[in-house]
Image (cartoon, rainbow, N blue to C red):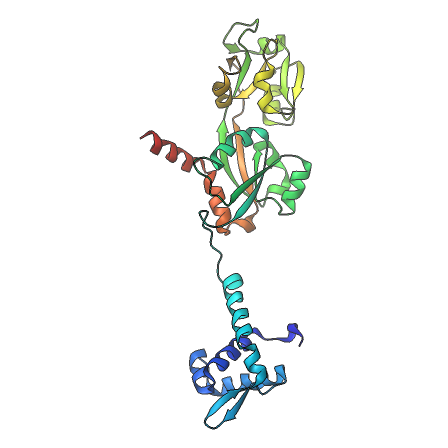
Amino acid sequence: MDLRRVDLNLLVVLDVLLSERNVTRAARRLNMSQPATSTALARLRKQFDDPLLVKSGRTLRLTARAQAIVEPLREVLRTLERSVLTAPGFDPATDSRTFTIMTGDYAEITLLRLLVRGSTPADIRFDLLPLNGAGLDAFRRFEIDLAVLPEYVLESPEFENCRKRVVLSDRFVGAVWSGHPYTGTKLTREVLGRYPLLSYAPYSEDTNLGRALLRAGVVARVGATSGNLAVLPYALENTRLITFLPERMARHLAEAASLRILEPTFPLPPLREFAVWHAERDADPAHTWLRAQLDPVVERRRVAAQAG
């Protein structure tokens, strides 16, 4: 039998006919007229090349072929209804799911804490992938559930039709080793021009920070570069280097990394990271749950509740 020629509506009729073994009762259950149900039975007989139901006195009797398909047919229809026609649900306490998230290292440091705070459901796993060309290609192929991207990356036209929401907001501050020869508390243009800059690789002229420095007329001499933001605070020790760090990160690590924080005297852009996902994932209950874990409003309420 060619599956492409099978009418699924007829299979529903067949299931009821095999259960009722009576055209009138089957028609009533199906909310169909008796002639229409009889016509459907005729089509089924032709489709299966078998009478399926034959008269036996006042009742209808199932043929051997009909008896053989009763249970398989019922299971197929149940599976179709459960797996295809019923809207999926998601319960993190009982369901299994691996979420793949692409992000830069600052967002990874910050967001991983939100994702695994408290007791993570046993069957929920988070795979965090680096923000790079291969990751962006995987995102385009729908192989990544969620990307957390800095604002300047979203200027690319490929993200125009994606959903976006701010999940991280911070500001940049200057930072030096506590024993740095500059003993002031302000980061001025002159200070930044006097000492070498420890640059985070993405802080190029193409980023919001790089453009802001150019607009402010700040000329920085790069002394060293790292592609790992988490390394920067510790790399300052025993050097004359100056760097830019997200303020919350700088203050959190100030004592451990022996940092002194400098307040910039020139304007710098806010640091904002966006959760980005394909619109097709909007209605996925599991994805809705994932996005809620990164919702800054939900996080503030949680922190406030713990403090209260």
